Image (cartoon, rainbow, N blue to C red; front, top):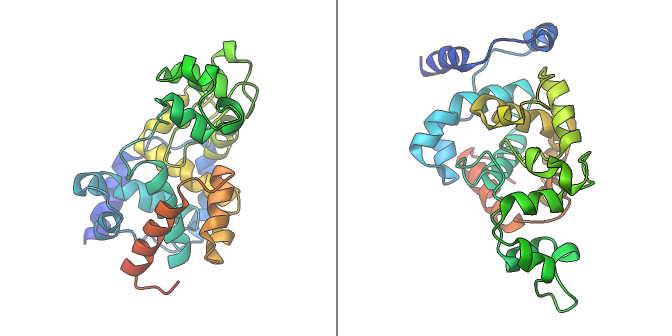
Length: 248
């Protein structure tokens, strides 16, 4: 009965279907009805507050099912560990760029650290100015224009896996049937699209296969181009696997 209630709530929360959603209907009908292994207890085991677990449960369940993440404990544990880390336990759907000079030097040493590893002049100048940090850090990358274009700030990380950069927003918009995502990037802050974009990106970038191998380091490199936050991700992964009663 609880699953049926969640499904009904999911239907109420879901935005109106797009043409692309309709085109996927036949494919989706080939999968079994949603009986999600994602539960409030599982989310709480990852340190997510009860109220947030209740709020996000239908969105996460739908997204994981649609992109075949809920087909094995390893996939589900890896995905949940990743989005829990990226979103600060589901408390944030927009990238936090309020860095100190020291934080800038640690996170982007090639850009903001001097030869001794200390913050350089640029880091000290833009510290605690999130918009300037975004525009300078992401300028000329990920399909963005120059720093003065404002693309870095406009297309900063959003959603539960932090879709970042104009080209990635365009790709996600196409995949999700949201052709206006470039004009309305804030759509990825909404729970439905925050979860759906994270699951779609995950599948499209081959993370299901990496998760099948149980390789969280490879998953982290695919998501972040590095090993940022690996210790926390591994801790979350272990918690999810333990809750699911699965072996590593």
